[in-house]
Length: 530
Ligand code: SIN
Image (spheres, rainbow, N blue to C red):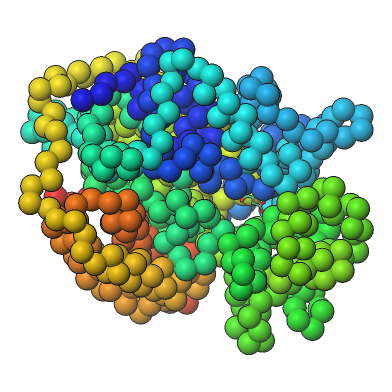
């Protein structure tokens, strides 16, 4: 059994920021199921919000966030995070992270949907890579931090599972060491889930393959509250191309003047919202879905051909190069795009300090639901949330005496595989995986109905049972673990969606097309019933 003061799962901005701060107070293990550089953060293009222009204000950033969130944001959480941005940016720059500057030395500021001001700090169109590389370097140089790659966190160990009375507390976790195939036991009083989101639950997504809802599913199985999973954000502009189907065309392209047009060359967003191509994402994604269904065309286009090749290759080098690689020159050709699953706005319910409903368990970043995003996340607020809440979670963890409930090593049993055999037919895993992603896309995406949700729920129930049988009878491998988490996460999305009898933000259903007129709209909160 291995013991650490802090156990962090995930190597995105949240996990690495937490680890760096925690290392000043004790030993830290950072677990990642693949390699350290594999994270959603590393794929972020747009940037990170921070009020930095004299014309801008915290109030304006708060208002834009609340507007995008369609009445479901926690305004205190929004205010705290927005006001913490300048300090978080200073700390990031102290780690060597560079943001682009104007000729006068001020930050260059980008704009995205739903923002009334330019307030997005960026590093060309690979902001996430810049953040991830620099944080990773700092973590690798820190002697108190052990990074364990190819360690797939399987399940949390809780006092409830150990039969210990009192408030349920997390005291460690089991992981699969993929290099040896062994299951290891880790002990800690502070476990921090920074596992990102679940885009892979859908057939089309802008997320990397790793985004399979692992932390969310694990926390749910351990008994933590999960909230607002019906709010899955579909990014309006994922590249539409048969050779490259999860490449994002950043909203920043529209922020610099890109216009959404149909195949006929006509702008169509003005018909849907006066803010046109830069309306909040829920509105733009729904409008594109509508246009695609109306015209029967497979995609729409982002037209930025009025900008020069020199400008585009300098401001968006990665997008420009990638488009060229598949035969599209953004300086001459409108870029074909479709909406794709992009961001999980709900998650493990936490307070402003990342605390979940279980003692000793924190969740930070996309895996968590703090109340910042409400029913629809404002673009580029998420990296900010990860950086700010990581710091607050650490402060809370070191000051919270509830986390100090030391459970003796003897009480925690080592993992036993019983009579489990090697998986004989991997085809079952891949078949079920495909089926989940297809059914979620067909029944639970941008436009929903009661009937579609019911169909999805019934099918997922069967799949869940099948996966469960597989899980108990066969030796664990990472594909099986991902499938188990994927089916759990898909079920949570459907369950939450079935509980919301209105359309709000990203949850749009033809059966309840209106938003309920309520001064205090409710979160959808669910917990495993035992
Ligand atoms: C983008 O660059 O369009 C994505 C930014 C975000 O999702 O916040």
